[in-house]
Length: 267
Length: 267
Image (cartoon, rainbow over all chains, first blue to last red; front, side):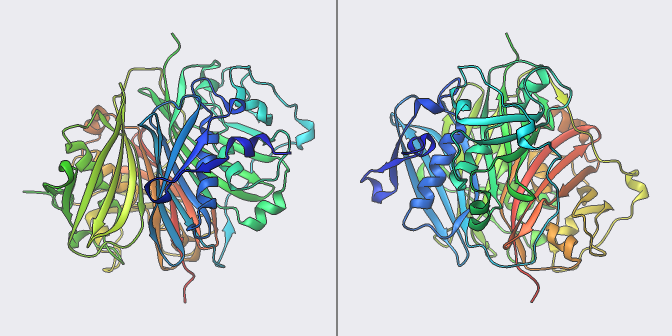
């Protein structure tokens, strides 16, 4: 049986423009308030890059800029290899729908080499996942139903002066972690302004950047266990805020992420 | 008299491909170990976008991926408006030299609107700039001579288990802060692995993302005063590390930044 995440990130080949283009289809299970959840779009890009016959190594970095909402239905992803070096590879991509560009971005793939290593920062402290209750999101955030989400701090139950959320997170139903699923998780924090204001507001990611620290071996070891995810904003104002986050699997820092988010004050 | 930063970021118009292309020239004052300092390249992109007749508002976000070293001499910058919305605008860009692409990236511009605002995080504590000695960098890091750099913590005088550097930083000679200069400063942290290992190593930025929080009014108020810059890595390993940084002007968070850096162990 195919997991809903794999259904939602599947693409077909389209024989156009030298085979750069693949075609995806929005999946209702990952709908957001306006258009699809950005994390599933980003995950589809990463999966398509990994499946590309010219891909070198594994994902190292992804930036995706959401220029306009994606409408329900098909969208085309044009993947272009810009340069392949000895140990890394640079990509650009464009998402078009109805002959208009709705997203653009860049990716870096690479070969992981054995070097001096240290994880300098530590995972946030958290009680065991089974001691933290799972939460439900409102129906208009459809995608959240595909995650088992347990807030250690910073759930959306009241306003807070601290925009930090730390949460246990895993796919629901459980699914072994891979780079596409990890990509999606780096966009799974609700907008920090909701937590500061204690309410939903019109808000959306403009630009998301994720760095993939996890090796294939670390992803395999993580399996379908929940990750511990944490994110915080630094400055809110003039219609935008930033959000920096980390995704941990035990004491393994799987990914770091930074995003710029648009918001409007509540009417 | 033209400041060396303005000389280094100047471009000429080139009448090619619908006027998308401008031509820059590397400046010896901003040389790095291999090719130019990445910050000056990023600053040239931001300046060129701001000078573009179609630009909407001011810079909000920049991602630049350094795919190959830029050689001394001219390079061409192709700027493409992907989409202009009511309050923001999406760009992609490509840097070519000798008919090969050496860098790519994306930018978001936008109009700052009056909204609820809060700077949630605080600047690091630091003694006054005049109580901190300025440092000299070795001659092979030419660009550093264009900054007055004073380390509060994390100078490159010994190895440290903590990769945090916090420093007072301003252009040398002093120059009023603007978005291009701020862009460059977000890449002015030496690679965090130098601090961890207590020595120079082969290392270079692969991907840099900067979010611009400062308004024009805040930049004007900052003038040519030094900023307080801070950066830290989270995980080092497999030939790469991340670095997250903030640039403060007094209690104003001017920019946040995240970069992925390649490194090799010393031979």
